[in-house]
Length: 258
Image (tube, rainbow, N blue to C red):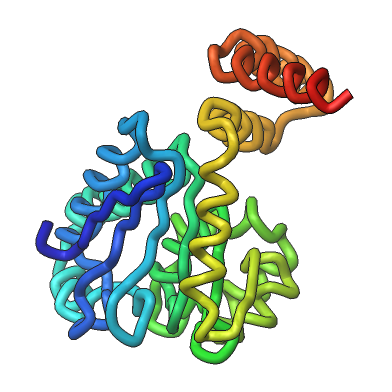
């Protein structure tokens, strides 16, 4: 891949690394297509349990590439729609990936870059160097696609604050409002991310996939519908080989310790 680096490590952990440091890892149509392909590849790999999304250079992702923005300003309505659907498809692929996903944010994550971190299950951020912000309204855009995911993650009040003000916030503030999962000292970012990835990789892959489907599906459901949906997924989970095997191991360990 031209804009990404893809690595698989022992223990079921894979890394996708944004690799346009000279552009502050700004999003381009080509990078979006490669991101979609990389996640599709890893999501279909039974050996992979956790995907870490990180970046080379000083920034995690600075939003849209400047050349991309310039070209976009000349698009027709149909071209803009087609272009928006590329972003929508890529983000949906990442968000609905059945693996646990972690955004390792070591520097600024702005606009679409902030959205890229938002759609991951976890964000681990550097206290000293990470910044978060949705800057679209400053240049006449709207945070349309990323806004849909942010609204689910932090609720209406916080989403309005971030999307309408276009303010940049620190990792500590992003953690306080529920956007970021963990904040660590910059020199501990690699260790903290690796520890989280290993902890997640030790869990049942099928259970993580079904739990993610459960959480995604229950958004917007009334209580009765959510409970029926949860019960149906519970039946599926109980019938998996992983569930049977792990229950048998747990019972064996319990008997051995008595």
